[in-house]
Image (cartoon, rainbow, N blue to C red; front, top):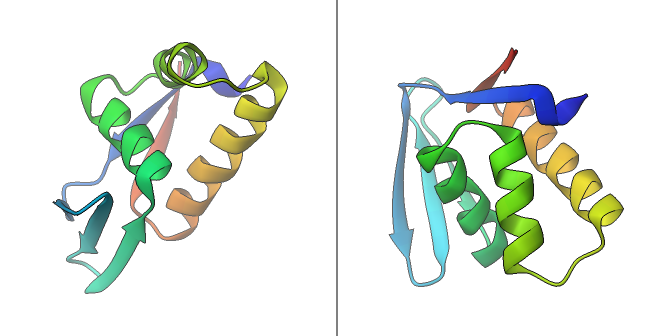
Length: 92
């Protein structure tokens, strides 16, 4: 299950908040990415605790969202970060 996963943000990734967005620089590919306000909150939570279970619990408490929708959103978010080689999964 996805919630049993920990996320490692790669050492080559640097972030900066600009207004309500997080700008991400991947120094390996020299690509920039931007996260919207919700994506920024999700990234910040992963920076605090790498557990997807923590992220899920935090977002479920902080926002009015159905549990199944949130799980799908987290799954998509993590897949996009992986696709851009910004994170690695660690199954526990």
